[in-house]
Image (cartoon, rainbow, N blue to C red):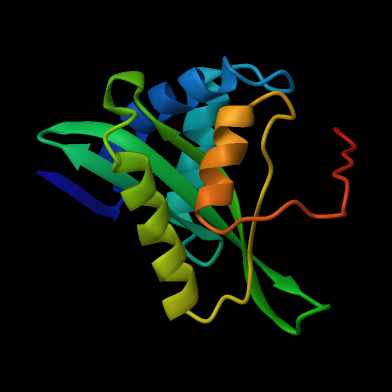
Amino acid sequence: MDIIEEAQHRDIEAMADLLASLFEQEAEFEPNHARQVAGLRLILSAPQSGRLFVARQGDRVAGMVCLLFSVSTALGEPVCWLEDMVVRPESRGSGLGSRLLAHALAYAEQNGFGRVTLLTDHRNSDAQRFYARHGFTLSDMAPMRRVF
């Protein structure tokens, strides 16, 4: 039976491995174990910045999702970024990703967040279809970045 719950520090290595598999698929990012571990530690050590949820299948972390918190001046309320969501390849197609996403969205709604925003790789049509099935729509906003 799958269990979805808040991640713990003991889950960091498993989540970093999941992030590596996610970043291998994306054109803009590359896996960097030390950076992923550092980022996960920052989130877990500062719960005001966000939440990490894991899906467990037995003793194994089979998926994860990250919500990062911000405030929208347009909405005048707190909002979330769905920063990373990934399910192990062998667990895909089982509904685990849908349950994990539903858990994160329920958390956001129950805690007064007015919007959840996410980015997908332009070429990842599977992810875009998945999120569309769960009520996400394309935005007219275009992401821009400046990296230091």
